[in-house]
Image 1 (cartoon, helix red, strand yellow):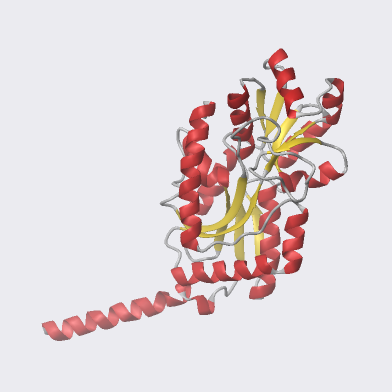
Image 2 (tube, one colour; image 1 turned 180 degrees about the vertical axis):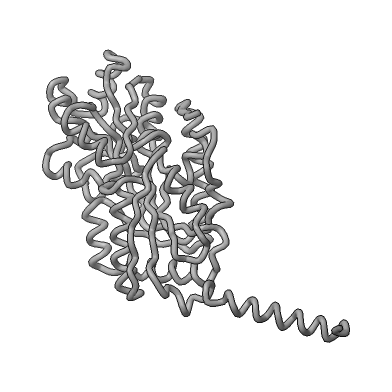
Length: 332
């Protein structure tokens, strides 16, 4: 039988051995040693997907390991986000989170299958983007809608008759529309979709009349004239669409409802891994070719430290809670 000092020494040695055994999973020097997956909680083609694929391609080059995007859409981003929360915290599963999944949904949904704070470790912001109010051109021409003021007048004369598409219940595109209605005293019929691509398809076909969409996923259609822009939802104009006014400039004073997209890891992911991902993404976002690609889509790349990103999300959660309360949006 071991004496107490010897027992303590043996246990200390076992503890050290155990720590050493798990060290590779938390050691940035060995990470990544295999494929990394970025979960996207929305369908392919939307801004969340675009941001993830740009980052994944560049990280794959930097790490000399495959970085793949896995789209797990449903329930306003809740399905894929909950899956990321349950993933093993070893750095090999990351989440491209959004303003919806990590600032809005906890105020909109009565029950969430994840805790946006306790279940995740912030890594970095990737891109903040404005949303844009855009109409089916035929609908706009048929009703002589050329401005936000024209739209407000039409909505007041036709309450509930305009179909407003969104990328899903509780998303920033949904809440942008709800906030608009609350601030202008108008009413539209909300039609939620499972992501940007199907929503945009129906707006362009005329099945829905308008949408507040993330600018990057709409930019190509705007340039092609398939959508009619009226205003961006940010406090400042977008350099990508300098002739399109902000909602405040168009007459809705105090309106500001921008979106953002950033990387998160499951709670418990080792700090060295989190810091490595953050540093490498920051380098990617400084690359001129990457910046040019995002800027052309109406996004401004912006990295943050994990602490800065966490603080930012806390501020956004408080901000959107007020917007949700003002709009009355709720999903049981």
